[in-house]
Image 1: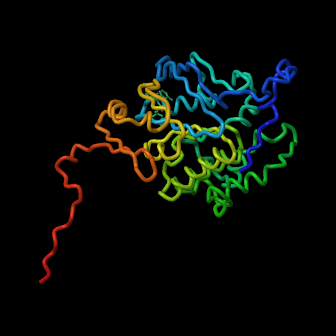
Image 2: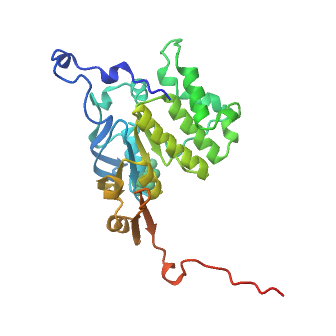
Image 3: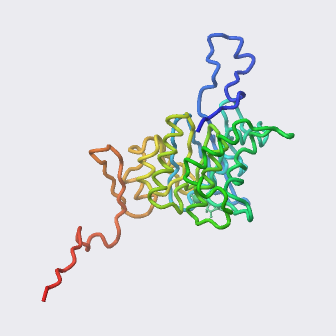
Length: 303
Ligand SMILES: Nc1ncnc2c1ncn2[C@@H]1O[C@H](COP(=O)(O)OP(=O)(O)O)[C@@H](O)[C@H]1O
Ligand SMILES: [Mg+2]
């Protein structure tokens, strides 16, 4: 995927340009939320949440069901208006951009989407190019290449001419992911992108996420339920609970036995793989104490 940044992303303000010693590229996060208060019909579900997504960095949002992960991601994508606080791009308040300009910068793979009827996979993936088309009879010079690339890397090229309403949950999830990739944004927000996927595609999606950050400088914010996957893919982990940030930092700093046990409400043990250095989490089942480590079937006597 080629991540072509819109020219305005790095455009310095006039007064900055006048001073040759000042770095013309805006410093700081590619997208951030500052002091976000989020509510549904007056019912507060997130209070004073701040987090920053940086270029070339994968940030995993983790936490129990209902902790506010999806709502925070939707607020960062400007799909949920904060009661207080701001969503910021490097040049300032994200609210200043019109919808199409914002969609050239930030895309969201939502947790669930309505499935359009009678539309092919290729057409759905091409929707991702919409913000790049000029408003009137516009051509999108990178469009065909971006769509073909998105189909190829998500393994959906072979189903490009099938109707999306005939796909399995896993196939559909890969098509939505392809649509986000075709949008070719510098910030990629993914809400449980491994949902419905078998093991191979879970690994492929997370590998692709890592490639996008490492090779194309994309800032990724990803909600993951699997804490070991979060530890493996993320540079930074943000742990949410009850609509508040409990901790943020490296996987080893955030995924601690004490915090995870408190937040998830069951004992969680944490170890570090000496070979890879990766954090592994082990929730302790109520049955763990009375279960032998390895169950071997009783040998069946041979008559
Ligand atoms: N559309 C909605 N209307 C009302 N309440 C909602 C809506 N969506 C989510 N909530 C509530 O907001 C809280 C946070 O939800 P959500 O952000 O989906 O959490 P998570 O993604 O961590 O599971 C939950 O209590 C949930 O019930
Ligand atoms: Mg959610």
